Image 1: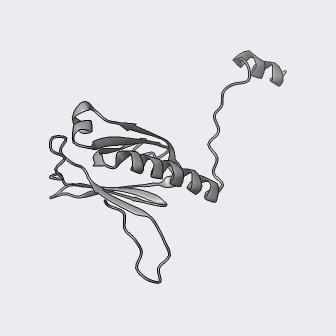
Image 2: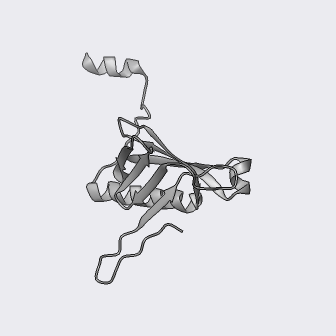
Image 3: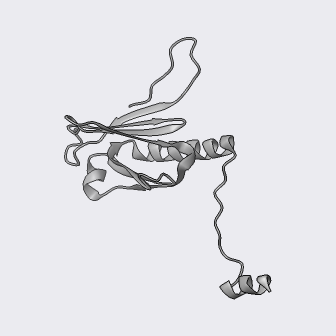
Length: 138
């Protein structure tokens, strides 16, 4: 498993490190590494040219887990994070092990991060028709 435990005298902080894997046989022969911390998700991609993408947990709005038949056979899954991030509105952690555990961790930590920052996502479900707004201006 990819969880890292703190050394003696350190504060307990959870961190999960996983590599993107081939769907068949679940082997980690790709050059993509996912690091999920309590406050941030980092995706490192590439061999010759490395691209590092970060997303703060408080920006994660929803999380979905999918698993194809081949992923199920080899114990893998894909976690998709829907974010308010401008560069990547959808972060996909593809073909990772322990995908259900990672999904639950991201959901919990994103909610805690929003509460800590006092950031609340509101949905505008609309209380009336567009004509109601025009009537208020009169």
